[in-house]
Image (cartoon, rainbow over all chains, first blue to last red):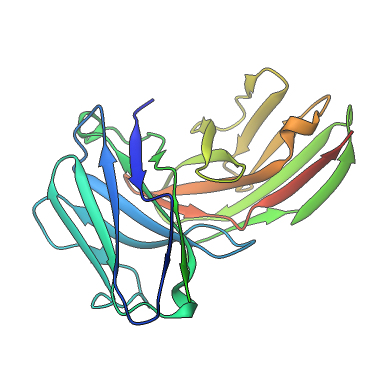
Amino acid sequence: GAVVSQHPSWVICKSGTSVKIECRSLDFQATTMFWYRQFPKQSLMLMATSNEGSKATYEQGVEKDKFLINHASLTLSTLTVTSAHPEDSSFYICSTKGIQDKEALNTEAFFGQGTRLTVV
Amino acid sequence: EDKVVQSPLSLVVHEGDTVTLNCSYEVTNFRSLLWYKQEKKAPTFLFMLTSSGIEKKSGRLSSILDKKELFSILNITATQTGDSAVYLCAGIRGTYKYIFGTGTRLKVLA
């Protein structure tokens, strides 16, 4: 399967600061990347869909000004948590499907390793 | 509203037992259902099910989809401690939107 690299794997930051998480597709071009958040013992909740060269599409209830997504190239999408608060502490994970699957109706998602964010 | 419901929420078994995990779904424009295993970090892919009634197998794991009744099951036979994980199912809506269930937390005791 495709390789998706997410960095950092964990980060601790102070309240009020911003944190940037990177998601890279290493061996294919990803036109679309997805950002999920997972709270302890809960499932993956889609936050936003990021499309290369255009604005991200946010799910209902996700603040676009707080969770800034940039997908400037076919191999990199970034999620910036701005003015982080303790309640933003969570496990953030990205996933993607490759450009070669653009027309495919059925394909599994490839996940990054995830980033555990702790805001103190 | 789309939803994927898994049961049980958690399960504790002993090595060698067989377990069945359930996943029911209501997903508009449903395409496929996927099963993932999540240990400490990223989910790892297990199965993708698109057609009803066709069992997929991988070693001790197998899964099947019922598109009429809108559910899927994941079976694990002869469980091992390494099977301890959270098992997630997800329905694909449209071309690529994944709706995840809450997961079943499986613990296999030695």
